[in-house]
Image (cartoon, rainbow, N blue to C red; front, top):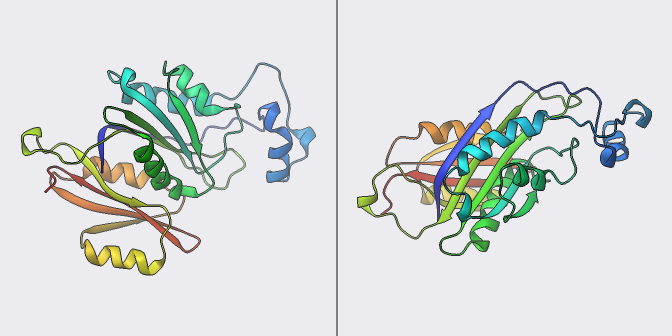
Length: 239
C-alpha cells in the first residue's frame, strides 16, 4: 500500500518548438517521424526548453519540505524526450535532488504509471519517499496536442489511523498488465466507481484525484492493446 504525501498537476497547450531536436536524437527522430535528417537543424548549445519549463516547477513544488527524504525518482512518459539527453537527470539537477536515483519508465503508454508504482513500492524502505512524474509532452509532429503532467510524492504505509484525519489518499492496489478476465474479477471484488481513461491519458487521473471526496474509493483503468491495468485509490481512513 502506498500513501500519497503530495501531488500536483498542470496542463497547457502544446508549445511549438519547431523541428529542432537534440543532436543526440537527430537520426532517431528523423526515422520515427519520416523527416529528412537535413530538415532538423542543429545549433550547438541551444535546445528546446518547453518540457523543462513544464515539469521542473511542478517537481519543485511537490517536494518542497521533503527534499531530504526523497530517494527514488520515476520519469513516466507516454512520449519520448527529444530535446535533451538524460531528461530525468536534468530534472533532478534542476530540483536540487542530486542524491536521488532516477529511472525512466516508458514504452507502455499510461500503463507505465502502475508499473512505476510497483517499482517504487519494491524499492522503498521505511522512511523513504519516491517521486513519480507522469507526463505527456508531445512534439509538434504528434497528432495530439496533449501537454500535461502530474507529480506524486509517495511513501509506504500499512495502515492510516483515524487520528491522522481523512485527507490522506491511499493507493490500495494497482496492476500494469492483466487479462480481461482478471480485471473483471477485480472489479467484482471491489464494486466502486470506475473511470476508464484513454491509453495515453494521465490528466483524468490527476483531475479525479483532486476531486475525490473523503472516504471515497475509485478505480482508474487503462487498456492498451488488450491489456488492462488499473490504480485503485481511496481518500481517507483505511479499515
